[in-house]
Length: 229
Image 1 (cartoon, rainbow, N blue to C red):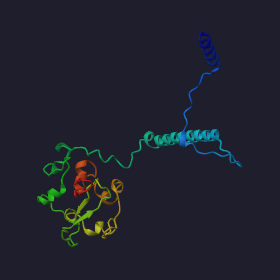
Image 2: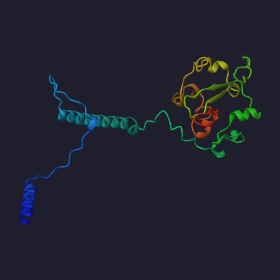
Image 3: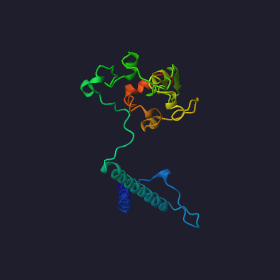
């Protein structure tokens, strides 16, 4: 029995002396490895595939760095302003001291800016569609237009002609800015923020299309979707 145990121990010592230290396997990209075949051969070269993938990753990183530096030079270093501001940042709240004395008694919106529509409805001002006395004054058009928004969780937009025809003649908007036909006017908020469509006035002479409260002034028609009204 003793001889048997000594024999087993000797074998274990011999095997342990012959074993080499095992290295941890290198991380493999697995399925992301792109098959690489040398020209005029059908043999798959895994090392070549890994090398090709490594070079591609390095080239993409370099191109991204170059692009970032170009953007910094064009915008940050030169102090250029981005055309589209952050729409979720509300307009600066204006106090009475910020307004001209003639506008301080006017009704205000949520941000302290004069509410021109309320001023008309309260009889404080009487705007005209034209500055020329010879041109006949057009009738106020009491017609609402619904713009369907392609977003299930965003309210639709109601455009009230009545409010706008206090100030504007029909020919100011039609047909150059808006075509008077259903489905003919396709635009988005980026167009408006860049001064097109509604942005021809809003953000300049009318209230700014930014800030959640102002968003709700246009996006006022809720819709039932996904259990939310």
